[in-house]
Image 1 (cartoon, rainbow, N blue to C red):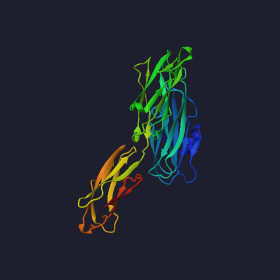
Image 2: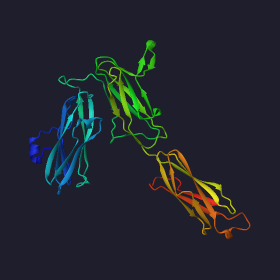
Image 3: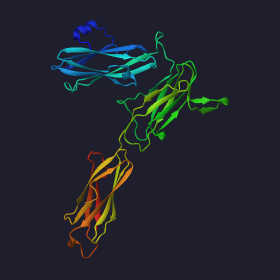
Image 4: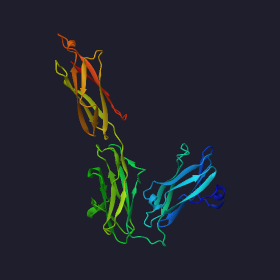
Length: 382
């Protein structure tokens, strides 16, 4: 880290990018040097300087770090996180150095510079600046590799997961480049996911008489690029959570070469609980009545339900015994909980007629405040 006063830094530094700073009562301002708008050849070094100034009335600890958007950018930077301790009216500079691998595919790679002072300026931070690096093919003075490479589109990461709703799909393009001097054949393998969740499609091939056939690999001439399509469709009963399947690309010319990448997926929670109070024995003389509360979880998260029985009549002439006061229901599972209703005051039983009707209900509550479509189930005992 290079400590400088703001005035001397602006006077000495040759800043090619825009100066980004806050106005009014904002306590921090930020200056970013060449922020990736200049194209950079693969195999070279890219330097980003970030100057932070504290215009507030208190000293502050400020965290400056690189947040990955495009896969691989964070790994290019040896130290992607720095801390500054700035007094009022002080400024300081941090420098991030990106070493681009020589086999980086040409293209635009995005990242975010985050400036955060959550302990001292929680209302004004974090401040986020979207940046990018335009990568060009390696120059002649950089020794290029003949090994193939591939990248994924869209780009996902642990902080930028692809969300797939129930019944939805995610299409991933696997962009492959053959940098060798021979024709090569590539195959893609997706592990860590059930086979019924995904399909892999290679470009169609042609044979005699103009017939089209579905190929089982991607064939590329030297220097050529191609695309393999991966379509991920989680099953309708997929559990809520994060999934990180590994993709591996196999090269026929380089059988021992390990080419891996990850896809970060998220299946969001879906809450759908069906409740029913079934009457098994609801007309009694001396024995207790028997009911069963059924909880069916059609969602994709585990549910916990609290149960309570309430008398609905003015006079309480029965006692109630629940088999359990908590119901735990796994996704796609039905749980039955028995309820016994015991008549207690025999002298209130009618001597003639159709019997006395006892009204009660079972109230349901989710401790996590998740939705329950029918949270009060009425019951009748005669």
